[in-house]
Image 1 (cartoon, protein in one colour):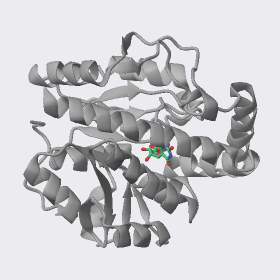
Image 2: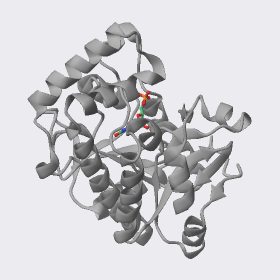
Image 3: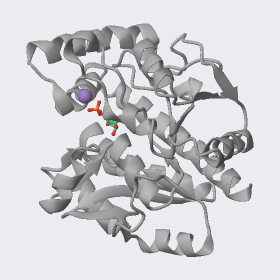
Image 4: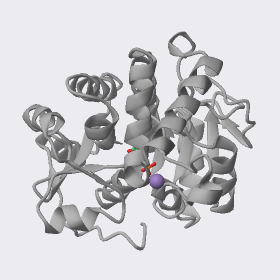
Length: 309
Ligand code: PSU
Ligand code: MN
């Protein structure tokens, strides 16, 4: 389907995913950077387990994607998941890094971009995460724009997320996605979510209200040969949302700290998330958990609707 992706690259499927592929059960891809770089142990393991279970409870099969000792896994069994969540020196792998993790037989956590690549190789079309990477604040001087955005412009996977992380420049992120032709669809909302809060106040050009409509949209895009991903923008549940003004203050402090410590490149996002967790006394992580679980549920429903088309 996606011309660039080699569907013959050897992948290691978990038993559960292998069975799902045989029986045509819908599969939802899950990323692993959030496990290794997004949250500390043991919270990361408990979120990873819960996200998988939400996918199962909604009738789909979870496929957590990660590199372990150079092997690309699609679906981890419970022992592998626990082992991965405990590992140190896991590389954060985006598109550019995947070949190094594989060739050097390293452990690698896949970002949104890398997870999309592996999902496409495994013929998985739906992927749930927390928030995508995007255009960082001050990108006009740092040039820091996540490779998640360019991946979304070419790889055929729909990403269910609570928008882009609030640490980013959300208007610039939306402009970039528009230029690259990536549809950003509000799922039951007119506004772009702001990760920890329900709305960024930014109006979205598209809104769909049901998993069926989302599946029909995906089918229309891909059956036209229009390569690329879609962002299903699914706001955090109201009761789990954090106050946007409080978070904005925390984020500004986090960015100041990152500048004074000289943190940049792929370390920046993990640094900011960790800082926010400490600054909010764990509240940001509780919200992060709630929104990821919510995205997993919606992703499972869309995966089922896509199969039923
Ligand atoms: N969303 C989260 N926690 C995370 C990430 C997203 O709730 O840790 C990760 C994703 O894997 C995303 C990555 O692809 O951060 C973006 O990193 P960068 O800005 O370096 O491209
Ligand atoms: Mn970056």
